[in-house]
Image (cartoon, rainbow, N blue to C red; front, side, top):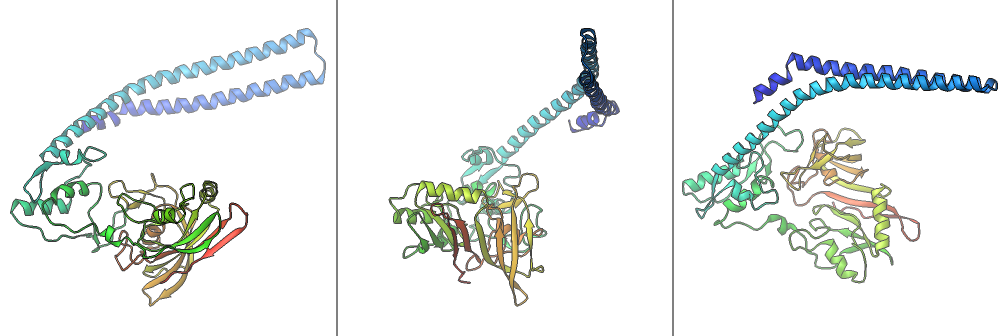
Amino acid sequence: INRNIRQLENDKAYAALSAELARTIQSAENILATAKAQLKEAKTAREQRRKEKELNAQEEAELIRESQFQKAEYKRLERSWKARITTLQTQTEDWERRISALKSERKTRSAALQQKLFEQFGMLNYRGEVKNLCEIFGQTVHKTPPAGAGECAAPKLLQQAYLHGWKPIAMAEFWWGDSPKTEIRHHGHYYPACKGKCEPILQHMLQGLQVEKNPMLKRMQVPSKNLEIVYEDSWLSVINKPAGMLSVPGKEDAVSVYSLMRGQYPEADGPLTVHRLDMATSGLMLIAKTKRVHQNLQAQFKNRLVRKRYVALLEGVVPKDKGTVDLPLCLNPLDRPRQMVHTEHGKPAITDYQVLERLDGKRTRIAFYPRTGRTHQLRIHAAHPLGLHCPIIGDELYGKKADRLYLHAEYLEFTHPITGETVRITKEAEF
């Protein structure tokens, strides 16, 4: 099928036909544009004659006939070119239909072969139970396994262990070699298995083994007292979110800024949280006590009227004192919640930065001024080779794990929805 597609796409007759169609369309556009300009000039000339003197009935009738004749000539010209183009398009579309039919057949056969292969992947777990990939992914949202499922290191190592009757005790995966273009991977760094391909497989394969609880849940902070309120009035408040706390409830039943604020302001209407910070990020968050205030503040964020400043510690030295990182971002669908740089599917993400201090020739203290608010924007712009190429210390998604993520939202500036005054709030980082 591939060979037949290539033969059709590279056929000289098809290429000549396509070129002739393109030339004809261009010629038609040029000639019709010229004819239309001549029509306009003739119309202008007739109007000028009418202005110069009062025409009798015969002269006026002549001008009308002239106008009608020229319009009819233009229509005939237009129909002539349209007929020539339609003929060529019909011939070209016949080739394209043949190519499209072959591609459709290739896709159908490929999917059937892929399904057959997935059915042969019999994945064991420690109990000795076997499921193929189709059965495993049948329980997921997408229902079908993604391409390459089952080919990763973790499932293969577990399968080898179970086939030999060995008991896995521990496992860790590290990246070897250069980073992919869209993702951020560092040579020799350890990373968890991906969510899209490996998580459903490992949920089956680890059955029967005693495994530790989700480390993400362990790191979620549960404060012994109420959140620190940096600013408060009758309509809103600004809190200092600790690192390790969710901004809003997630899938797990864990304490979040929203749940604490809902308990603190039981009479408040509306969603309360105006924006979010990553769980690992600390710093200032706006809380709206009324729906009206919430809508106003969200509109300010949407229209980029809120000024924000973050401070971070980076692993490595940023050479330029200030600058801008402009890298479009989108979700990595096979490895949530990771984001990736993607020029085609990514949304605009722009960050201004100012180096505050270079420490020991190994680290950089920096201020970030995000113009957009994409998920993980600052973390990727810091770590990516096309960005600053200096990951934030403690960023285990795009850098190396530490005692915390050294990223703090330290400044907010916005217009008060009720008073109209400019509000400026600062909370310096503890690092």
